Image 1 (tube, one colour):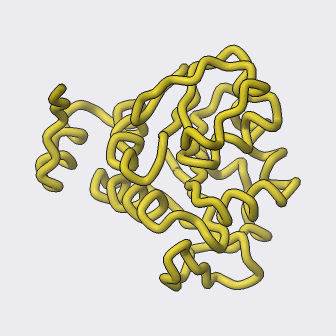
Image 2 (tube, rainbow, N blue to C red; image 1 turned 45 degrees about the horizontal axis):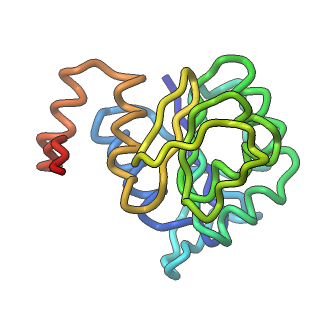
Length: 186
C-alpha cells in the first residue's frame, strides 16, 4: 500500500508528523506532498520542513490511502485547492481509505461527503449541515473513512489507520516502540 499526506502551509505540526512517523515505524510507504510551489512547507508552529513531492506532480492513481492533517490555516489552504477536493471526493467514493483530522474533516463535510457517516473533527469545525453523526471520540472509523478530533488525538488517529492497513503484530510493534499503551481510564 502507498499513502499520501497533504501538507499545506499552516498544517498542525503534530497531526502531520506523528501520523507520518507512525506509518513509517510500521514500514509503510508514505509520501509527504507539498501543496506549495516548492517542497518547503511551514507548519502552524513555524517549523519549516521539506516534503517528498509536489502536489502539481501528484498522481492519485499511485496511492491507496489519502490523508489530510488539520490546523486552521492548513485546512483553509487545503480547502482552497479544487483539484485536491476533487481527488479526495473520487478517492472516498471509490471505496478507498480516506483520512482527515482536526479541522480537515470539515472539508469533506462542505463537499457533502460526511452525510450518513459517523465522524469526528475539532468540535468548533463541526456543522449540522454535514448531515452525518458526530462522535465525541478521539478517532472514528466508518467504513473507508477515518477521522480524528485534533492534535491530542493524533496517535489514536494514526492507530486507526494502522488497524485498517496492517496486521496486529505490526500494530503491536509500533505501539511497543512508542511506549504507547492503548488503555483508556475513566
